Length: 408
Image (cartoon, rainbow, N blue to C red):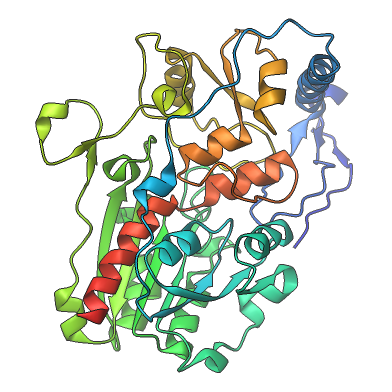
């Protein structure tokens, strides 16, 4: 599903050449990429910024840039501690739209036997193969769920889970809903109907639960499945479960058996950010600087929601998703643009404002993955897999709640 755009100039009637629209020439291997047509002047401006950044990075890595001012950080946060390995439940799972493996890891830690994953991106498929060497991973064309007859899995799978692409419902993806060719909820529903598992979990951005998409949800998710499943819809906040990031996700949880559905209880918060006196029963969620092991400067907060580098008009190594997020990162003196592949490179490439530059291992932690999770591909592709993923500790809590309902 690669996008390759030719370099076309489309003159605007009576406009100077600099105002001509030029299509992107950047090839893409991501089905989430939305190239945007810019004017010649805009395209040249972005190209100049990219060239300057590339030259500055090269100079820094060759030892010719400004002297490093930050020590290599040693994180104080271990996401695995939020997901203690549970005993085997004997329940088997199949993963759809698996991405970098957020749901897969959470379910595995919760005691499920992970059987197979389907993922259309080649790089994400490689990530999954490296992370789950004993699991069947169908990546690239083999992972395109539109071409799969899922009836072959009937009787072999107890729980189906997955996060269909969120771009049709997110602000970054322009919220086209069913008009977006990336809308894969009908395929998720088809897989559940063909496999007939004991339970399913579907995940997406919270906007899918808004009034704007209420008719879509009714017609494309709940009605087609409610004949055989008892479905609940919940929204969870990542920081409520110890992840140092503002990130809300919606989950659709369905059970074939009504007794199981009645036994199911939504995960309750285990952590709190902010006023620790709100509840003595809750653990303290650490802030971003503390999580990354950065010096105490008297200013810390949760990370803004991490943006996927594969969403939007161009690939990028920035995790910034809004002006508000930029202000929050500036407040914490953290640089969210030009994320480096590793901590050594991040230290060498001094940001213009001298704020701490993030690395891929840092962003992995912020999303709740172990920092050594084997994300494959170029830096922007790794960040794309991270930004698209369900935080594994959040998946773990949902998985644990489903297991409790199924095996009582």
